[in-house]
Image 1 (cartoon, each protein chain N blue to C red):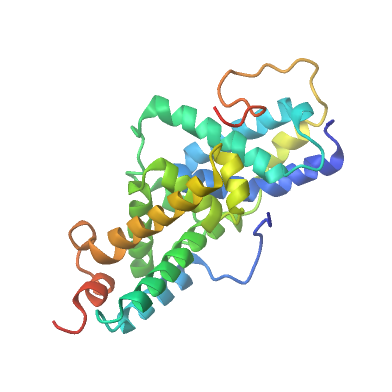
Image 2: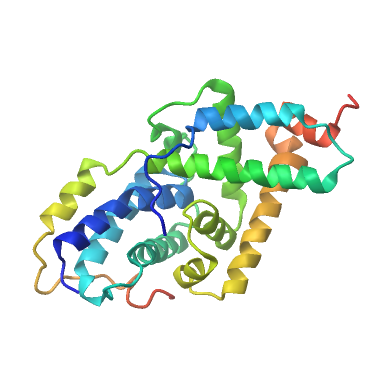
Length: 90
Length: 182
């Protein structure tokens, strides 16, 4: 997968404004297929805007430090019983 | 495989999308970061079971997704984003109208069944292939496709067709359902 870092997508505000203004121009019923495609495209934009807004925040120091500290593998780590990563399909 | 420098860098590079996934799933910024933290701890503790050359992000997403689901079963949605804690995690607060629109979208996303929501996020936002998403969710590729389609239809209905009562008759909804006849 590609990690979506800093990219050209607008922030939530911009995307939402676009979505809104596009919606205002929608002519209404009568072209069901086209309308549906338009709605799906809007939903896709909103979903990615929401997601990418978090992606763009980068790595909080808390996690960078955590990963640095756990640099040296521990001999016998204690792992709980939920969400075993070896068997990803509970 | 052992925790090499490059593997550690790769894990670090996955953190932003792990957080985005966690927040999209849970709708709660604090809870999402706890999920990410637990995911990282488990990943690092079990790093020996990671197969070199396999898909690291998919492996990490699988851990997070399973953690979320076991947590979810316990909590049964008792913690909602009632106080808008998700919005607080945003660095840039959207302007009023856009913010409302965003909250509507968030609310609609939360109404989806969990299976559909996670499938839609993995494919539509995280950028995983249907195959990877199926591996992460432990189901067939066809199942993922159908969940994504159902999620899209339902969001479309909630936001743009039947959502008038839930979300208020704003311009968007009027434009879509009412046309020019008003």
